[in-house]
View 1 (cartoon, rainbow, N blue to C red):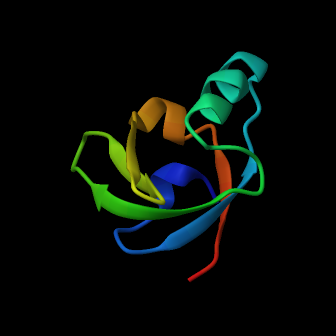
View 2 (tube, rainbow, N blue to C red):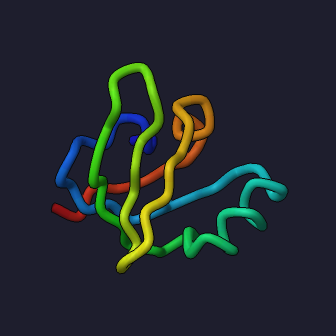
Length: 73
């Protein structure tokens, strides 16, 4: 499953971030392979908002389609 398939309220674990440049930037935001995040909002035709502890991160749909995740709950 890719990140763009996550629904509001779901907790996901990042499995793979394929692009090394994106991976480096994502690590700075607390997004890394094995990280557990919650989907706090999914804006129609817009970004997906992820919550990592007290920080919220907006991920564009095109990028979200390339990040592999698995559903925790």
